[in-house]
Every structure is written in structure tokens, then in C-alpha cells.
Length: 478
Image 1 (cartoon, helix red, strand yellow):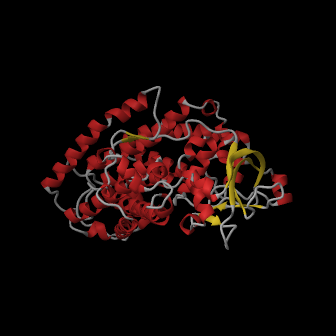
Image 2 (image 1 turned 45 degrees about the vertical axis):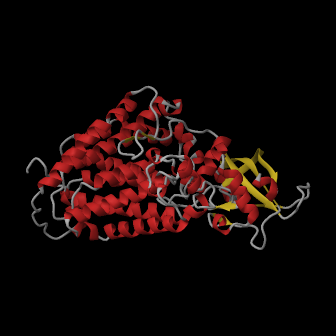
Image 3 (image 1 turned 90 degrees about the vertical axis):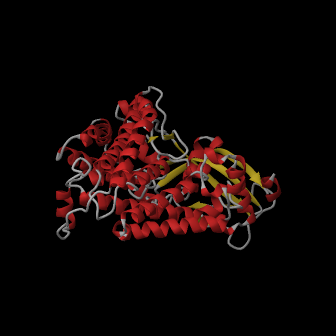
């Protein structure tokens, strides 16, 4: 079947599969490490309450049939193990049906988590990982030639990711059109990284060049993905370099890394031969008719389901990061249609005093990723995703993002709940929980070069107001 196989992309297919497996490992480990506090039976948004209120057809998940914290942990561990085996090359050496079963199980397990994840899993990179993961089911194993149709579908996914992000920007905040958005973005993005302070202090003309280059990469270069080599490979290479630039400037979980992984199979085998120096590649095996039939059927399904995402791309009311079906089969993407000019942070404090008197001593809870202590340098966490830290950033933008989980979060702090405290970098009350907890809003700004030299601080901050009044355990529970 000459029409079925994509010559010159055998290595690119295998590199893509292993890299995608690595992203699955990270996603399942994030779920395993954080679910008890966020989604567990005693979590901030418990899964049992969710599945009791939302029918299976709206959020298909294994946990609609049964839920326990042990079962969730088992699903996350099983997913991480299967993904690690894929990274090690085990999955690609299995017989084709078994290899497809592993990829399908990875997708099913992660879909089950995402569909009960509620606010904690309301990010575009969840749907992106699921969509890429389902296409990987039909990419074949090491003994088969890579199917051309699925490789084209992966390019179509990368196109929608990049082009959708470009359109949402050019249609949205005027600062994208006048090339000034990066005057603010590095400082106000959800979770700055260790180099974000330096990126923010780049000369403003360079910031304008960055924005112009972003428009070129997202609005023009994606069309080159569908052209012959070497043009398509060069376009993919430009996207990889752009995404690596974004990786160094902030923490966006596995969003940037997934874009990079999607670009890898576009690069020709000649490139991977030069990079990897593998041994001679044997001829691919025959193409089973049943597999070819499945690939054609899946391609037809994606074409049909692409109607709504394509219409959304062309719409002046373009939605950002939307799924049009509960299985997240074909989605629409985009990010930062608007850029905040001012960074507000919620600082959570506790006191051992029973009464919030003027002389009460308040101690701050330090989060792992989001800024709190102005002298603490931002850390690198991506592709790992700190879900609580991200939602705290959104809560500072609008209190609606804090409901109903934030009052429960305060209650867990007042109880000294160890599972919740593990989500934080520092517990200022190691011996006994505080009597009162409050939350205040500060405006954060990066320090100047002079302030950084004189004080050693990365941030300066100014109190804006109260986010939550001091609450004791009984009041917080109500």
C-alpha cells in the first residue's frame, strides 16, 4: 500500500511516540502526587460529589462506576508505568494489536482523570495531550511503516494549536497588534520561571521583535507544515525553537512541550539519522488490511469532527481552549488573547492568636511556584504542573475562580491537613495549626536592576486589599 505509508518518517514517528510517552509520565505523576488534596474523597473538589451530580454521558470516566482514593492512585500508577514502558521502547516492540492497546489504555486512563478533574483540569493542555494520545493509537509499532494519514492529522493538530493561538492574539488584546504585550507578559504570566526576571528586563525594541516573531510563527509558518520537504521540516524547526524560547521564559506545564513533540515527526528521517546515529533501518513489515481500515475510519472521523473547530477558528468570536465533545477528540486551542498589565497575588497568612488584634503575628504560607516571598527566586517546574498555584493566579484575577474550593482550602489549613500542606513549599505552623487564617491581595512587580543589586529581592510588592477576612475553623467550615 504505497499510498498508506509515509517514507522518510520512520524515525520521526518513533521519536514522537517516546516523547509523547514522557509527557504521559509527567501527567500521571502530577495526578498521583496532587489528587488526594485536590480531588480525593476529602479533597477541595471531591470526585464522589462530582460524579453524583454529573452524568456519565457528559463526562465519561471509569470513576462513574466506582471511586476510591486507592482506585484513583492505581489508575495514575498504571498510567505512569505504561507510559514509562513506552519511553523505554517496550510498547513499539509489541505486536501491533498489543501496541495499540497500550496507547488506547493510556488515553482511556487519562481521559478518566481529566473528565472528573473539574477546575483543576480545565486547561487546554489536557485536551491537547488527549487528542495527541488518541492519534498515537493509530501510528503503528516499530515493525510497521508510519501511516501517512495519521502523520497528516498530527500536523493538522499542530496547525490548529499554533494558528488558533495566533488568531486569538491578533483578534484580542490591542497590545498584540501594536507589539507591546511583552512589556507586561513576562511579569504578569501565571507562573514566572527562573529566567523571567531577565526576560522582562530585555530592551523594549527586542520585546517588539519577540511579538512580531510570534505572529510570524503562529500565523504564517503553520501553513508550511503541509508543504513538501524541506519546507515542512524547516517550519517545524522554527516552531520547536520558538517553543523552547517560551519554555525558558515561563512555566506552562506541558503545553510548550506538547507543541514540540507534535513538531518532531514533521522533521525528516535524514535529520534524525544525523542526530541519533541509529543503526541501519530494516524494511517495514506489511500493512495489515484491518489496520489500514481503522486508520482511514479515524481520519474520516477527525475530518468530520474538525468542522466545529475550523468554524471556531474562522469566527470573530473565537473560543479559546474549547472541547466540542466529552471525549476531547478534536478541539480548539489558544492562549493569552488578553494580557494583564498588573500582577496581583493572593497571600495566605495564619496566626496562632485567637483574636485578630492589631498586634497579632501573621505568618505567610509559601507556595511552591507562585510568588509569595519577594526574595525567593521563581523556580522552574514545567512540564510538571502545580495545579493549586495556577488556580491561585486565576483567583487573584477574579474571586469567582476561587469558588467553592478556596474556603475549603482555608479549612484544611486550619485543620493542619497534611495532604493539603504537601502542596505548599512551607508550612509556617509545623507544631500546631493556626487559630486564624486570612488572605490578602498584593500587587507584585519585578524589581529593577538597582533594587535587585541592593536588596537581593526579585519582587517588590504593595498591599492592595483583603481577599478573605480572618476566619477560625468553625467559621471557615460554614
